[in-house]
Image 1 (cartoon, rainbow, N blue to C red):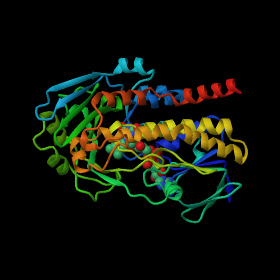
Image 2 (cartoon, helix red, strand yellow):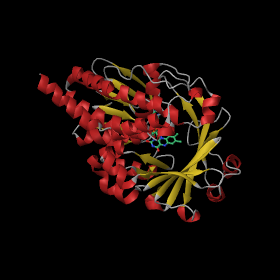
Image 3 (cartoon, rainbow, N blue to C red):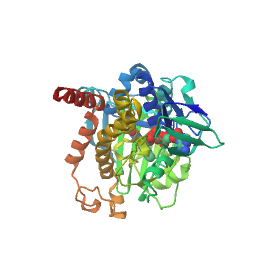
Image 4 (cartoon, protein in one colour):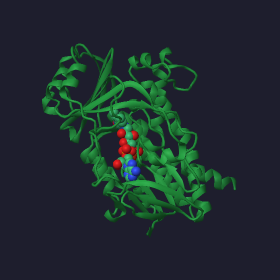
Length: 409
Ligand SMILES: Cc1cc2nc3c(=O)[nH]c(=O)nc-3n(C[C@H](O)[C@H](O)[C@H](O)COP(=O)(O)OP(=O)(O)OC[C@H]3O[C@@H](n4cnc5c(N)ncnc54)[C@H](O)[C@@H]3O)c2cc1C
């Protein structure tokens, strides 16, 4: 039996960020990952300024500059002929507006960067949590194969199908959105009509295609969100095929057909929606990332929110945690900071879904007094919501609250 202080379950983007932020603050932390190796499924992702400002402060600015792309603009194209419908300048304009860059990055690259912030002996692969007991003096963690470990606190960063969330919140019934995401990577050279300095959105009547550059613009990630029957897996381990892409995008613009002609490995993720949780924590256990707030991907914020969670948790544990009362207070403060924020992001993420989804599932409301089929919030509200999300600086907010607290004392 070994003893650690903070045990993080799951070495995804959320778990690694939390562990790196804790380690950086001198807190004893170990990460337990069920996979035999450290790797991230999937292709590209968006990193908003709310995430990049934190990653930069953790020392990743140089690696991000070398591996990610700062798209100059988002072009919205007509799905049937590819003509430009609208253009949103990003690049320098957004970096100045939000105080940090908006980047697109390959998930594997970001995952490697985060892992590089931790000594190898802090990350244990091939360790699947199967159960745990929380007591007055600590948490006992049980892993497949019979290994047992003790920790002062347990952080469930174990993703959308989290065991820790089930233990904390009980069983749940996810609601199928009516849509799947198909995605993969293609070489930018195979799409000569598209500029690898830009992001593209082709918005059709029954779905949409998002294309954005990764790996210094050498490749595009594509994400196709379109209706699909229920029953497919909520996981990137579910593969589709070029034929699925072909059928979904029949009759679309030449640029989209060029994508269909070159795409080889196509992965599929069935999009499910879950209500925000009422509670994340007990005295020694809490949740983080998708385990805490699984959200639809339409705002491109799940991993960004996980990064914010990781940094917030480390700040709270550093400032409050000495002894059992300190850990409980730190987890309370973490949840009080993060749960209202991520609840708003989680509910807002429902608004970005394609309109067909709203017809298929009018029961999915944004809990703000409207239902999906009413075309609930207008585009201006969505833009304001995104600006609120991207402007967030979770570290500055926590420090500001600390100052207010000490000034009042
Ligand atoms: C189509 C799509 C597009 C998206 N695009 C974006 C985007 O552009 N930007 C963005 O910010 N987000 C995006 N997201 C969301 C993002 O992918 C997730 O929010 C993010 O990866 C969650 O990270 P996590 O670390 O919380 O969970 P995960 O990445 O799921 O990591 C959980 C880890 O825990 C491990 N694990 C699970 N159970 C156990 C156990 N019992 N014991 C030990 N280990 C365990 C798993 O193996 C895994 O490594 C998208 C999602 C989808 C579906």
